[in-house]
Length: 273
Image (cartoon, rainbow, N blue to C red; front, side, top):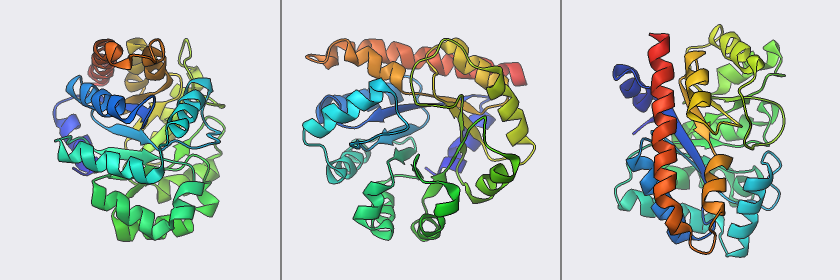
């Protein structure tokens, strides 16, 4: 299912969108497969599928550790692509948005990488360390491969730069709640709400807000402010990080967390209508 189509369906049902972010292979491939299924069963509308990288500069300590563990376990981009294929083979239907640092698709070959994503059943790509000014090759190849390229917008993004990002993006825009790296925070900043309002003056492209989302109240606040959905990441990593020796024991807790965040997204959407 295309990203755009999924948002239309959510709008028809008056729902806010929920997208969990995982790093594949942390702490094992088997766990990641089970985790994704639990997330989808408990309200996830999209999946942000992270390919572990050795220097994840946009990520905080939780995801830095996740990448290190996955890489130490022998996870490669090729294994990640096979992981997406397996999820599709086993019936996962929600859109998959791959997150990776530019070094990986560059080394793989931009066109080859994007074509492979399309073949495996991914719909979008986020590259946190690729600025819009250097994205021409990726954007050109993405149109041929039919992969949406999603850019991030921060509270410090200038209006001039915002216009460039809006023009280039497809699928949705990733609204970064604050400057810095990923990680759990206690509250959503007012600057985020102002940023959402500013972006909506320039585009009707859906907005997904992330960085620091760890509570249903965060999701509700973001969607109430005009975002179309919320993204969680580090909060999930903290749940299974409590039991890395037997992470499967945390799956029910992960399912409960996902359900609550999705409910927060829906409550926020109700506040808008």
